[in-house]
Amino acid sequence: MEMCMLVWVFSGILAATLLSPCSVALTLDGITLLEIKSTLNDSRNLLSNWIDSDESPCKWTGISCHNYDQRVRSINLPYMQLGGVISPSIGKLNRLQRLALHQNSLHGIIPNEITNCTELRALYLRANYLQGGIPSDLGNLSFLTILDLSSNLLKGAIPSSIGRLKRLQFLNLSTNFFSGEIPDIGVLSTFGNNSFIGNLDLCGQQVHKPCRTSLGFPAVLPHAESDEAAVPSKRSSHYIKGVLIGAMATMGLALVMLLTFLWVCFLSKKERAAKKYTEVKKQVVQEASTKLITFHGDLPYPSCEIIEKLESLDAEDVVGSGGFGTVYRMVMNDCGTFAVKRIDRSREGSDQVFERELEILGSIKHINLVNLRGYCRLPITKLLIYDYVALGSLDDFLHEHEQEERSLNWSARLRIALGSARGLAYLHHDCCPRIVHRDIKSSNILLDENLEPHVSDFGLAKLLVDEDAHVTTVVAGTFGYLAPEYLQSGRATEKSDVYSFGVLLLELVTGKRPTDPSFVKRGLNVVGWMNTLLRENRLVDVVDKRCTDADVETVEAILDIAGRCTDANPDDRPSMNQVLQLLEQEVMSPCPSDFYESHSDYC
Image: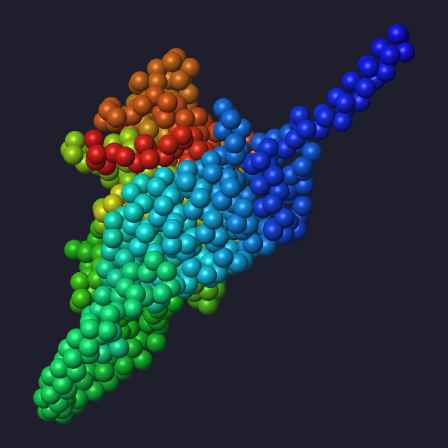
């Protein structure tokens, strides 16, 4: 009997041992992630903890899960030097909300299966080597709020289905090889040139470039849901052919008459035009120190017209001034408007080095950075030519406009914080060489007509100081925004920029300048003042009274991020990439659409 009992117990233990692996089997999402990993080239072995012996993938590098069901919520693997392709298995992660694979070396196509991730809110694939087109069914991702496919090798038409993405608030398709007409449909009609810059073959109202046929007449190109255009019926083909023949005959007769008229005019104007050109050329040659450089064809005007406009700027054209010079508004003959910064101080060194560093700044393109168009050296000054940003600076909105209708509401301030963080993260992490701004402040955050922020004056602090001078002359920036270690050492780092951004966040929350008299007279800066009020549990006194739509949860989240950014120890501050992720995840979670669904951008 005892022998039978021992055999039964041993059999039970053996069965439990054999069955135990099933009880800790990897979840289906974990298996899917391993399928995705198998198509990636992890040269640095950063995904070494993605192993099939785990029960859950939620602690794997770059993975976060929903708390209630442990399904994969986000994949964050930027700057990992990953190669390979994006596996179609990504479509199995149907609870995925964020996919961030930017700044890697991925190639191949964007798999159409990604459209099965119906809860996807943010898709970051910028700065890879992805080819092919945008999946035509991308418009089915109804929760998508952020779409960044910039700086790839993508081509073809922009699918009109993107216009159906009613919650889309950030779109960046710049620096690719897209072509054809940008569909003027739905939400696509709300994005401007910055979302499409660097695609030379795109046309449409968004890029201020009319689409034309080979005969030079405006044309409406087909909105491509795929690479194939619809085939017209035989009857309509005959009709179209007849219309074209008649139009061409009429056009031919008009062309002959027009050429005759132009030839007569040309003979009389040719001499005057040649004389004018000679005079302009002579003037430029005589002024040997005059030099105009435009970056990447970004300033499509004759050099003589640009120089003439620059030389005619006077006090009536001044729109502002800052630490680096006076800013003018320059209007071209076709009403194109630009901002011109006259540099009031220069760095020791050759003009060649100065111009080469400016070319680096001119090559930087991002939707949340002010675009540097060109540079002009006149006999008595140096001028930088930028895009003109219509509504002025954040400083003006927060501190100069007392009218209630010009006060930014809470949702608009959060959106400005996010956009500014994106611009700074791009400077710190995506540029080569990386750029430390050194002068982050509200007057350097410019707002366009959609209240989209654009960071200005990046790179100028380093460009315009003498690095060989005494350390006290190296400190650039504005008191109140400067990190303690920067004031002490004069050495600017990415973490000193992070501190300044934290102060900017506090400025957005409180509506007060960093050196507001109400707390400066108490010997405090805005960081110390905020910490004092929070210790006294006076959160209501921290928030700008004009922001009646602010809610406690997001205010606390922003203050927590600002607190991390302004930590006295720079090593304990997050990077700008981490700040950006915190803003997206803490402020926009769980549903980013709630963050953007505001009736007005003003209080």
